[in-house]
Length: 69
Image (tube, rainbow, N blue to C red; front, side, top):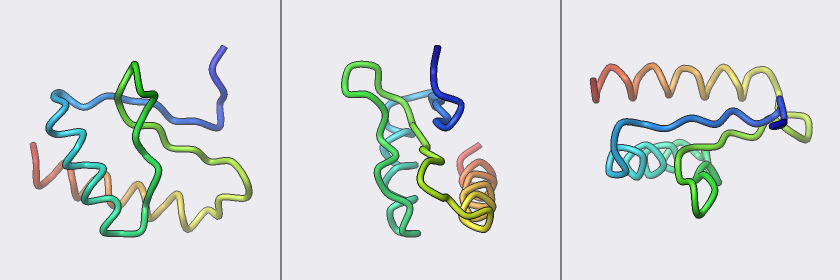
């Protein structure tokens, strides 16, 4: 069972994942790199993540998708 507080996903290539992580960091969204042996992206919603923070991340994901699709 995986925690419902972590959103885990993969992008099509490791290079695209690295770009996603780097661009997210430019928007002060950090520590998104997934597990060291599994890779991917991991978004933690623990410790009182405000709704505005989640909305900001969703907006970033949409922008990233539009620019890289």
